[in-house]
Amino acid sequence: MSLNSIGALVTYCSPAGATRVAAEAIERTLRSLSVNVASFSLCAKEGRETALRVFQESRGRFRLLFVGSPVYGFHPLPAVMEFIRRLPSLDGIHTVPFVTWGGVCSGSALFEMGRALEKKGAILSGAMKIVAEHSMSWAFSNPFCGGRPDRKDASRIEEGVKAVHRKVEGNDTSSLAPLDISTYTGDTLATMLEGGFEKSKARLPRIEFDKTLCVECGQCAEVCPVGCITLNPTPAIGEDCIRCYNCAKTCPEGALTADFSKSEEVIRTRIEKLREPQETTVFV
Image: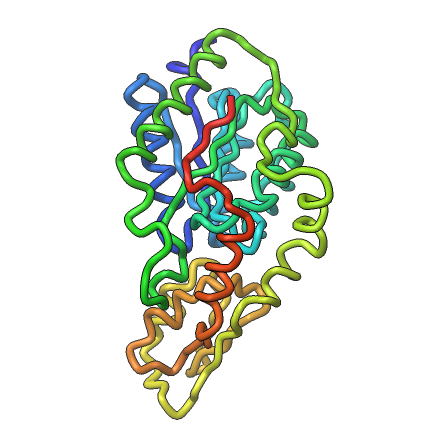
Protein backbone atom coordinates (compact mmCIF):
# COMPACT_ATOMS: atom_id res chain seq x y z
CA MET A 1 0.00 0.00 0.00
CA SER A 2 1.37 3.43 -0.95
CA LEU A 3 2.61 6.01 1.55
CA ASN A 4 0.53 8.53 -0.40
CA SER A 5 -2.64 6.95 0.95
CA ILE A 6 -1.28 5.83 4.32
CA GLY A 7 0.82 8.75 5.50
CA ALA A 8 3.49 9.56 8.05
CA LEU A 9 3.55 10.75 11.64
CA VAL A 10 6.27 13.25 12.64
CA THR A 11 6.79 13.68 16.38
CA TYR A 12 9.43 15.67 18.22
CA CYS A 13 10.35 17.66 21.33
CA SER A 14 12.08 20.97 20.69
CA PRO A 15 12.82 23.19 23.73
CA ALA A 16 15.15 25.54 21.84
CA GLY A 17 13.47 25.32 18.42
CA ALA A 18 16.16 23.50 16.41
CA THR A 19 14.47 20.10 16.47
CA ARG A 20 11.24 21.75 15.34
CA VAL A 21 13.14 23.24 12.38
CA ALA A 22 14.40 19.76 11.49
CA ALA A 23 10.90 18.31 11.86
CA GLU A 24 9.49 20.98 9.58
CA ALA A 25 12.13 20.13 6.95
CA ILE A 26 11.07 16.47 7.20
CA GLU A 27 7.42 17.45 6.81
CA ARG A 28 8.12 19.62 3.75
CA THR A 29 10.01 16.81 2.04
CA LEU A 30 7.28 14.27 2.76
CA ARG A 31 4.60 16.62 1.43
CA SER A 32 6.68 17.24 -1.70
CA LEU A 33 6.46 13.46 -2.20
CA SER A 34 2.64 13.67 -1.84
CA VAL A 35 2.72 11.93 1.55
CA ASN A 36 -0.01 12.79 4.04
CA VAL A 37 1.66 14.06 7.23
CA ALA A 38 0.50 14.60 10.81
CA SER A 39 2.86 16.33 13.24
CA PHE A 40 2.93 16.62 17.04
CA SER A 41 5.18 18.18 19.66
CA LEU A 42 5.96 15.77 22.51
CA CYS A 43 7.38 18.23 25.04
CA ALA A 44 4.20 18.80 27.03
CA LYS A 45 2.11 15.95 28.43
CA GLU A 46 -0.92 17.10 26.43
CA GLY A 47 1.03 16.80 23.17
CA ARG A 48 2.20 13.29 23.98
CA GLU A 49 -1.31 12.19 24.92
CA THR A 50 -2.71 13.60 21.68
CA ALA A 51 -0.02 11.96 19.55
CA LEU A 52 -0.59 8.59 21.25
CA ARG A 53 -4.35 8.85 20.84
CA VAL A 54 -4.10 9.76 17.16
CA PHE A 55 -1.64 6.94 16.52
CA GLN A 56 -3.83 4.37 18.27
CA GLU A 57 -7.12 5.54 16.76
CA SER A 58 -5.74 5.86 13.24
CA ARG A 59 -3.26 3.01 13.30
CA GLY A 60 -3.93 1.99 9.71
CA ARG A 61 -3.19 5.48 8.42
CA PHE A 62 0.46 5.58 9.46
CA ARG A 63 3.12 3.49 7.84
CA LEU A 64 6.06 5.73 8.72
CA LEU A 65 6.95 7.25 12.09
CA PHE A 66 9.60 9.92 12.73
CA VAL A 67 10.61 10.61 16.35
CA GLY A 68 12.92 13.53 17.13
CA SER A 69 14.79 14.89 20.15
CA PRO A 70 17.67 17.23 20.91
CA VAL A 71 20.68 15.63 22.58
CA TYR A 72 20.95 16.77 26.20
CA GLY A 73 24.03 15.48 28.01
CA PHE A 74 24.42 12.50 25.63
CA HIS A 75 20.73 11.51 25.87
CA PRO A 76 17.32 12.04 24.26
CA LEU A 77 14.81 13.92 26.37
CA PRO A 78 12.69 11.91 28.85
CA ALA A 79 9.45 13.06 27.16
CA VAL A 80 10.54 11.44 23.90
CA MET A 81 11.56 8.18 25.54
CA GLU A 82 8.28 8.10 27.49
CA PHE A 83 6.36 8.51 24.22
CA ILE A 84 8.23 5.60 22.63
CA ARG A 85 7.70 3.40 25.69
CA ARG A 86 3.96 4.06 25.63
CA LEU A 87 3.50 3.32 21.95
CA PRO A 88 1.67 0.09 21.11
CA SER A 89 3.38 -2.61 19.06
CA LEU A 90 5.11 -1.14 16.01
CA ASP A 91 5.21 -4.36 13.99
CA GLY A 92 5.39 -3.43 10.30
CA ILE A 93 5.85 0.31 11.02
CA HIS A 94 8.87 1.99 9.45
CA THR A 95 10.54 4.29 11.96
CA VAL A 96 13.20 7.00 11.79
CA PRO A 97 14.67 8.46 14.99
CA PHE A 98 16.38 11.81 14.51
CA VAL A 99 18.34 14.04 16.86
CA THR A 100 19.71 17.56 16.81
CA TRP A 101 23.04 18.13 18.53
CA GLY A 102 25.09 21.24 19.19
CA GLY A 103 28.35 20.13 17.60
CA VAL A 104 29.83 18.84 20.87
CA CYS A 105 28.76 15.20 21.15
CA SER A 106 25.79 13.32 19.71
CA GLY A 107 26.18 10.88 22.59
CA SER A 108 24.06 7.77 22.98
CA ALA A 109 20.79 9.45 21.97
CA LEU A 110 20.21 7.72 18.62
CA PHE A 111 21.23 4.37 20.07
CA GLU A 112 18.77 4.75 22.96
CA MET A 113 15.92 5.77 20.67
CA GLY A 114 16.71 3.03 18.15
CA ARG A 115 16.88 0.40 20.89
CA ALA A 116 13.52 1.49 22.33
CA LEU A 117 11.87 1.43 18.89
CA GLU A 118 13.39 -1.97 18.14
CA LYS A 119 11.88 -3.35 21.37
CA LYS A 120 8.48 -2.26 20.04
CA GLY A 121 9.03 -4.38 16.93
CA ALA A 122 9.56 -1.42 14.62
CA ILE A 123 11.42 -1.52 11.32
CA LEU A 124 14.35 0.87 11.81
CA SER A 125 14.44 2.22 8.26
CA GLY A 126 16.82 5.10 8.89
CA ALA A 127 18.09 7.70 11.33
CA MET A 128 19.52 11.21 11.27
CA LYS A 129 21.78 13.24 13.52
CA ILE A 130 21.43 16.90 12.59
CA VAL A 131 23.84 19.65 13.60
CA ALA A 132 22.14 22.61 15.29
CA GLU A 133 23.22 25.68 17.22
CA HIS A 134 24.04 24.64 20.78
CA SER A 135 21.11 25.42 23.08
CA MET A 136 23.38 27.22 25.59
CA SER A 137 24.94 29.45 22.95
CA TRP A 138 22.87 32.46 24.01
CA ALA A 139 24.88 32.53 27.25
CA PHE A 140 28.32 32.37 25.57
CA SER A 141 30.54 34.93 23.86
CA ASN A 142 30.68 32.84 20.69
CA PRO A 143 27.85 30.49 19.69
CA PHE A 144 28.59 26.85 18.93
CA CYS A 145 27.42 25.92 15.42
CA GLY A 146 25.64 29.25 15.03
CA GLY A 147 22.97 29.36 12.34
CA ARG A 148 22.63 25.59 12.12
CA PRO A 149 20.73 23.74 10.82
CA ASP A 150 21.48 25.65 7.61
CA ARG A 151 20.68 25.01 3.94
CA LYS A 152 23.29 22.27 3.68
CA ASP A 153 21.81 20.52 6.71
CA ALA A 154 18.32 20.90 5.24
CA SER A 155 19.55 19.32 2.02
CA ARG A 156 20.91 16.33 3.93
CA ILE A 157 17.59 15.98 5.76
CA GLU A 158 15.78 16.00 2.42
CA GLU A 159 18.13 13.32 1.07
CA GLY A 160 17.53 11.17 4.15
CA VAL A 161 13.76 11.44 3.97
CA LYS A 162 13.75 10.59 0.27
CA ALA A 163 15.99 7.56 0.87
CA VAL A 164 13.64 6.26 3.57
CA HIS A 165 10.65 6.95 1.34
CA ARG A 166 12.19 4.80 -1.40
CA LYS A 167 12.70 1.97 1.08
CA VAL A 168 9.11 2.13 2.29
CA GLU A 169 7.64 2.37 -1.20
CA GLY A 170 9.85 -0.51 -2.30
CA ASN A 171 8.58 -2.66 0.59
CA ASP A 172 12.12 -2.93 1.94
CA THR A 173 11.64 -4.28 5.46
CA SER A 174 15.34 -4.59 6.27
CA SER A 175 16.01 -2.97 9.64
CA LEU A 176 19.09 -1.21 10.95
CA ALA A 177 20.44 -2.25 14.35
CA PRO A 178 20.73 0.37 17.11
CA LEU A 179 24.54 0.15 16.92
CA ASP A 180 24.34 0.88 13.18
CA ILE A 181 23.08 4.39 13.95
CA SER A 182 25.41 5.11 16.87
CA THR A 183 28.56 7.18 16.46
CA TYR A 184 29.95 5.66 19.65
CA THR A 185 30.38 2.00 20.58
CA GLY A 186 32.03 -0.20 23.19
CA ASP A 187 33.22 1.26 26.47
CA THR A 188 32.61 4.83 25.31
CA LEU A 189 28.95 4.11 24.61
CA ALA A 190 28.61 2.18 27.88
CA THR A 191 30.00 5.15 29.83
CA MET A 192 27.55 7.53 28.13
CA LEU A 193 24.61 5.26 28.94
CA GLU A 194 25.56 4.92 32.60
CA GLY A 195 23.16 6.79 34.85
CA GLY A 196 20.98 7.98 32.00
CA PHE A 197 19.55 11.47 31.58
CA GLU A 198 19.30 12.25 35.31
CA LYS A 199 23.02 11.75 35.87
CA SER A 200 23.83 14.04 32.96
CA LYS A 201 21.32 16.64 34.16
CA ALA A 202 22.99 16.73 37.57
CA ARG A 203 26.21 17.97 35.90
CA LEU A 204 24.48 20.94 34.28
CA PRO A 205 24.27 24.35 35.99
CA ARG A 206 21.36 24.66 38.42
CA ILE A 207 18.70 27.31 37.93
CA GLU A 208 18.68 29.80 40.81
CA PHE A 209 15.71 31.98 41.78
CA ASP A 210 15.92 35.42 43.42
CA LYS A 211 12.48 36.19 44.84
CA THR A 212 13.39 39.83 45.44
CA LEU A 213 13.71 40.41 41.68
CA CYS A 214 10.58 38.54 40.61
CA VAL A 215 7.61 40.67 39.45
CA GLU A 216 5.32 37.66 39.02
CA CYS A 217 4.92 38.18 35.28
CA GLY A 218 4.62 34.46 34.56
CA GLN A 219 6.76 34.51 31.43
CA CYS A 220 8.94 31.70 32.79
CA ALA A 221 5.97 29.33 33.02
CA GLU A 222 4.82 30.29 29.53
CA VAL A 223 8.15 29.33 27.91
CA CYS A 224 8.76 26.13 29.90
CA PRO A 225 8.45 23.39 27.24
CA VAL A 226 7.69 20.59 29.70
CA GLY A 227 5.33 22.54 31.94
CA CYS A 228 7.32 22.04 35.13
CA ILE A 229 7.06 25.63 36.42
CA THR A 230 4.13 26.44 38.70
CA LEU A 231 3.20 29.95 39.84
CA ASN A 232 2.09 30.49 43.44
CA PRO A 233 2.38 33.39 42.71
CA THR A 234 6.19 33.23 42.21
CA PRO A 235 7.67 30.38 40.20
CA ALA A 236 8.58 26.97 41.58
CA ILE A 237 10.56 24.65 39.33
CA GLY A 238 9.57 20.99 39.50
CA GLU A 239 11.69 17.85 39.31
CA ASP A 240 10.84 17.36 35.63
CA CYS A 241 13.03 20.35 34.69
CA ILE A 242 15.29 19.37 31.78
CA ARG A 243 17.72 22.31 32.12
CA CYS A 244 16.76 23.93 28.81
CA TYR A 245 17.17 27.33 30.54
CA ASN A 246 14.33 28.90 28.57
CA CYS A 247 13.10 30.45 31.81
CA ALA A 248 16.47 32.05 32.62
CA LYS A 249 16.86 33.23 29.03
CA THR A 250 13.39 34.82 29.04
CA CYS A 251 13.08 36.31 32.55
CA PRO A 252 12.97 40.11 32.02
CA GLU A 253 14.15 40.89 35.56
CA GLY A 254 16.98 38.35 35.89
CA ALA A 255 15.20 36.61 38.75
CA LEU A 256 16.02 33.22 37.24
CA THR A 257 19.69 32.64 36.48
CA ALA A 258 22.28 29.91 35.98
CA ASP A 259 26.04 30.05 36.36
CA PHE A 260 27.55 29.32 32.95
CA SER A 261 30.96 30.74 33.83
CA LYS A 262 32.70 27.37 33.43
CA SER A 263 30.39 25.80 30.85
CA GLU A 264 31.91 27.34 27.71
CA GLU A 265 35.40 26.13 28.61
CA VAL A 266 34.10 22.65 29.46
CA ILE A 267 32.27 22.41 26.14
CA ARG A 268 35.29 23.55 24.11
CA THR A 269 37.48 21.01 25.91
CA ARG A 270 35.00 18.24 25.11
CA ILE A 271 34.90 19.25 21.44
CA GLU A 272 38.70 19.00 21.26
CA LYS A 273 38.72 15.66 23.06
CA LEU A 274 35.97 13.91 21.07
CA ARG A 275 36.54 15.56 17.68
CA GLU A 276 33.19 14.36 16.39
CA PRO A 277 32.71 15.85 12.88
CA GLN A 278 30.20 18.68 13.00
CA GLU A 279 28.24 17.28 10.07
CA THR A 280 24.65 16.23 9.59
CA THR A 281 24.66 12.48 9.06
CA VAL A 282 22.01 10.22 7.54
CA PHE A 283 21.85 6.48 8.25
CA VAL A 284 19.87 4.30 5.83
